[in-house]
Length: 253
Image (tube, rainbow, N blue to C red; front, side, top):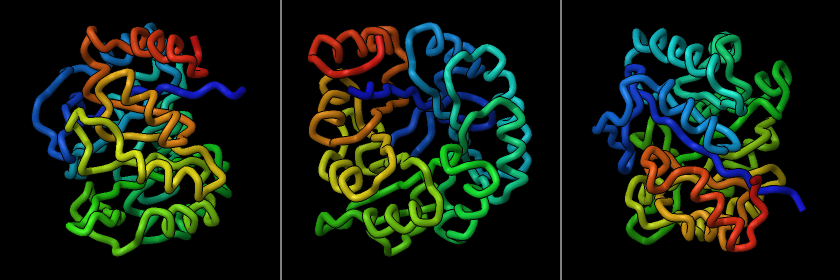
């Protein structure tokens, strides 16, 4: 049986690790992301995802510098993303130690970018970031620009199309659940995971081992991830994985 992955997510703003609550980034958790990465690397994270939410172009250098410093002390695969718009942007991220990239808004604006990136770097390197929010009727739609721009597309429609264009993995986030500590949007996760032939990573809302387990069992995803919760020792990655193993879930020891 294939092992399920447990992934730690770091949200970076101006090079600092911040808390995310429904895509509002306020509290600084770590001034230097290296401390968080060393902790996750030593405490059994299967992978790391680093996302830059800084909206100014001059902050790009800070993110690249942080990524390079982080990669020197990290011994697990890193996926990095945030405002990647060209092959040159991807090259810059990979050159500083990332193994994969997360592409979101630019893929919606220009799906051919996914084809270009997958041909050049391999589809295994291309993770599609998909941010979803439900309307008052409960229907989920895809948003871009860190949740500011409505696309009018539903997640299954977009992820199927993106996979055809070369996306090799889906990083699926519920904006409504992000930071709310109530668990994943399981129907959303299940709907997308059952519709595409590539791995799906669940993100948004998990704060307990039970939430992670529900993502794997009921959400049908290949990996579960969280940001805020893993930064505190009472919910360490190692403790969470021990709990998942005790529940009979196939995660790496």
